Image (cartoon, rainbow, N blue to C red; front, side, top):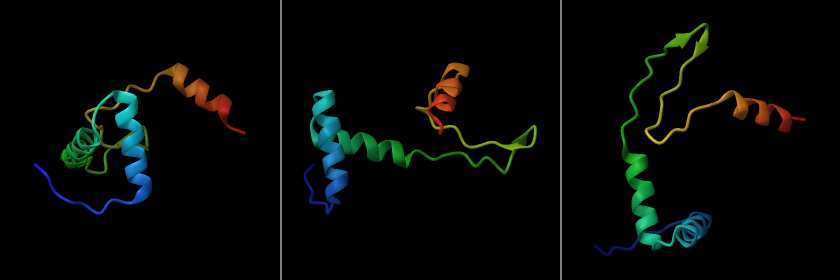
Length: 77
């Protein structure tokens, strides 16, 4: 379906870059991103574990590994 949207320049540039990287059209990229954004995120209900607040998990989230934590810690000033 065709429609006209007013999209900020930086958002369009990012969508174009993703489209080029993935070999897809800008419309496909924007549709995919909109679908992801529209997925309801379950309310965490203010849950905590060991005193640390838990955040909702996105369906496309990658696991946080010890290696990732170490790499990020090394990047800190």
